[in-house]
Image (cartoon, rainbow over all chains, first blue to last red; front, side):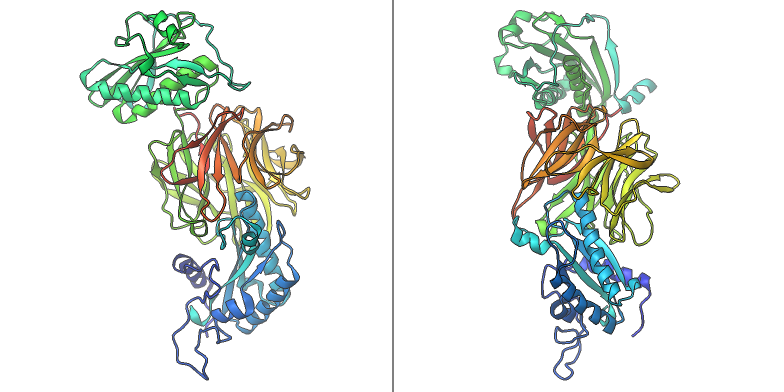
Length: 173
Length: 440
C-alpha cells in the first residue's frame, strides 16, 4: 500500500465531487467505490463487512457528527463517533479525509459558511487530539448549500447541522 | 460617420434646445416619505419618424412605461383612455385632453432608424401646469441596444420628477438556480435590472455564490467551489475570463466585495475554524488582516468613500453589525435590536445600511442609519437575505427562498419605504443579486 502523494489525493477528491451523487452523505449506504474482489472468509473486500472499507467507516463507525442549533461544540454522541473515527483512521493509515461542515438553512449564506467551518474544524481538532495526524485531515465548509434533508423544520435541520468525514485514498481509490 | 459609431457603443445624449422650454414645473414627487398615491402618467407610443421604426417606437414606449410603473411611484394611464391622439413630436400638446384623463406627467418621443443606428428624442410635460419639464433630449445608439436607450429615457423622466438619480440603465449579476434543495445547480448570470438580456457567465459544474460587481460594472467577484474548496474568483464580464485570488493553503475564502476604487477586495478567510476579514490589493495580491478575534467576522462592505467597512460579527454572542476603519482596528457596534443581523451593505448614497435580520423564526430585509438609528424592516418572510442597492440608493434587491421540500429561491425588489415589493422575473430560480452602477 503506497502512500499517495497529496496532488493525487486532491485530484481524487475533486473527481469524487463530480461523480459521486452521495458526495454529501445523503445516503447512509454511501459506500464510495467498493473494489471488486473475491470473498475472503465470507467478507467481500470493500463491502460494509470489510472493516477496512469506506462503507464500513461510513456505516459501522459513522461518518458524521451532528450539532445543536447555532453550535459548533461537539456533543457526547459526536465525541463517541469521532473516537471511533480516530481509531479507524489510525488503523487504516492510507486514508486521508476531508471533513465537510454544514449548516441548516436558518441563517445567512455567509454566516453559515463560517459556522460550517467551525463545525468541520471542531471535528478535525478532536480527531487530531486523539492522534490522527493533522496532515491527513482537511476541512471544507458548505454552509447551507448542501442539505441532506429538505424539509423546513427541526427534524430535517437536526440532520443538516453536521460534519461529515469523507475518506479519500486507501484501497478503493 | 466616426462620431456616430462612438455614440453607438456608448449611447450618447444631446440636449434638444431648439424647441423645449427649459422651465422647471411644479411637478414633483418625493420618495422619502413613501408613495401613497402614485403619480398618473401617459406614454403614448413614440412617433416613428422613419418607416422601419414603427415596432421599435412601440417597444421603447412600453419599456419606458414599465420602468416608471415598476417603481410604484408612478401609475400608467392606458392608451385606451387617451382622448388626444399623439402622432407628431413637434406638434403642440393639447393639455386639456391629458388633464381630462388625470394624467399629471406626459412623455412623448420620436424614433428614427437608419441601418443599425437608432435615434430617440423625447420630452416630458407637466400636464397640470402646462409646461415642459426640463429640456428635450435625444439619445443615439444601435438597434440591439434599444432597451438601454429606453431605460435611459425612463431614468431621465424619473430623475426630473423625483429629484433622485435613476437606476433603470443598470444590470444585475446573480446566481441562477435549478434543481431541488439538496442538489441545487448554480451558475452565474447577468441581466438587465428588469430581467431582460440574460447571459450566463459560468456553468453549473461547481457551486458558485454571491457575485459582486466592480464599481465600473465590468468585473465580478464571486466564490466558487471549482477547486473543491471555496475560493474567490474575479471574472471579466465581457470575456468571461476568470482567475482565482490566492488566499493561502488550507484556507477557505468567501464573501468578497470591491472597494469603491476597484483596487482592493475585502473578504473573509476561514482558517482553523475561525473566520476573519482581510483586504487584498487585487493587482499585487498583497493582503492585510483587518479583524483578529475568535468570533465569526464576515460579510464586509465598504462605505462609498472607502474609508470604513461595515461587517457582521458574533463577538457579542450573536451576529450583529459593526463598523470599523477600512484599515481595521477598533469596531463599533451599530445594531442593537432583537434578533440576529447579517449581510450589511452600505448604501451608495452613504446614508443607510441595508441588512438581513433574523428574529423569531422570520427573516427581514431592513435598513438603518449608519449610526444604527431609525431601523426599519422592509420585508418579512420565511427567508429573505442578501440585500443589494440600486445605484440611486432608493431600491433594494434581495433573495427570497420559500420553505419546505419544494423551496426555491427568487429575486425580489423593495423600495426603502417598504411599500413597493415585487418579484424580479428570471428564467430560472435566482439568488445573491448584486446591482451594477448606472451604465455609462
